[in-house]
Length: 240
Length: 377
Image 1 (cartoon, helix red, strand yellow):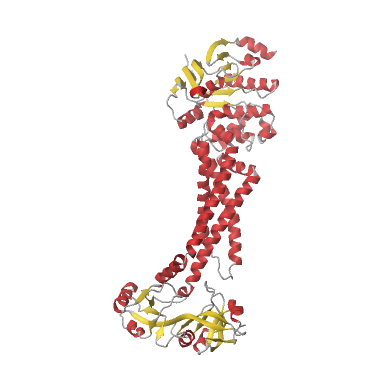
Image 2 (cartoon, rainbow over the protein chains, first blue to last red):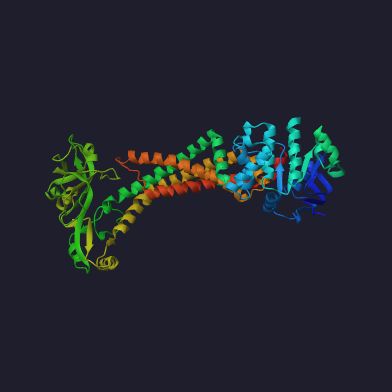
């Protein structure tokens, strides 16, 4: 059995102190393997974003263990967590969070730049991933000149250009119309399959289930159950 | 090439109004520092102009004398005692002091008389543009600077007036010998100078001491001090330093200029810090995104420091142009603003340091940003 890319064991998280203290996560365990797109589903305030922050090494759990590619992040300092994010994780955000003063190509290249990758090789990689999300003609465009769907595709290209083991997407279709949302999910699904990445998508939109290999349900900070989807029926749904 | 520069420059130029405000702050600050440093250097240069323009190994002045213009009284008989000291080749007396110049309307104006034995290589005028230095050997002949024509009521060579009631004729005209005290310098020979300032022939103000070849200045200086009491024997550098120290710090003038420099630098730092902080705050989610995608602290610092350095370079370039214009326009004024090339280079680095220091507040703000905030918006 292959080692999971991301593994959480008995993770709990308490946010705030005193009267504002909230148990955001309670004893959550999960693992994400390569080549699969997992959807994390739950209502607002259920702990989806907190779990994503912990799995993405942006927040430390109050209790429990998180391992990224076999390495535990317990007790890691902010700079060590940044290094793990740099090496293993790509993010796609609901609001894209592109740099308004950089072109589409520069936004993607930035993910390589922070890793110290520059020059012709970085440019070639950038062009390749932008082509893979269908944005060859928009490389020189600034975010303000792109539609929401195009901006999200630039954000996906930025997330994958450094070839991380896992892609974590936070409500990637929430700001998009249904057609663009489906295109975005199709790209993320393709990344999981063709690039053999572990992809986790946080959403509360059940229309996206067709793209999932696995669906995790979270409520009140606890994983309640999970479903494995039938790839054949998904394929059939996609064709129809 | 790294995208640090691209990101920094575009962030900086994105809000042009804020960038212009920041530049105005830097330019004002740097120009103020430049002008005050220029005044300081100009003042320093004017203070020592007489010392700078005579070739001597030692200056002999009375005890207690703090600068060239200070009252110094030495007996002329000391010349022989100085000549008797081993290593001394030549001793030339110089007489300096204030006197009164009669204007055509009968009024009087103060002048500072400088007299010495011209033939012996004393303190003679330089930058002579009309007439000759040799004409000063004729009693009653003086040299004045043309910038003081109006003050002295003369119009050039051959003009006549009176100093302390004695008739004088302008025999030479100089260009650019201005006094920082604003009192015009009047050059003449030793005897005339003694007469104009009312000094008996048995007294002089200073002695210029020139040494024999291979004589050790410090040894001779110590010999002079041990043989003759009540005097100071100063090398030109020591006399310059003593004069500068008195006028710049003894009077508080230099301290005021340096305090102005410090205040200007503080104001500039505050303005740039405020601008960088506000720019960083506006781009906080972008910095959080950088952190989220794994950028190290060093990468983020580079972006902010690059913005600061860019502001410094552009601001300094504009300030340097203004500074150069100010230098040009004050070249003929009573108090020149002098900005030597090395001061310009030092000011450039000071501007860069000022802007980098300004970036600290912005850096401290970014350090506290949690990358997870990008998931909440």
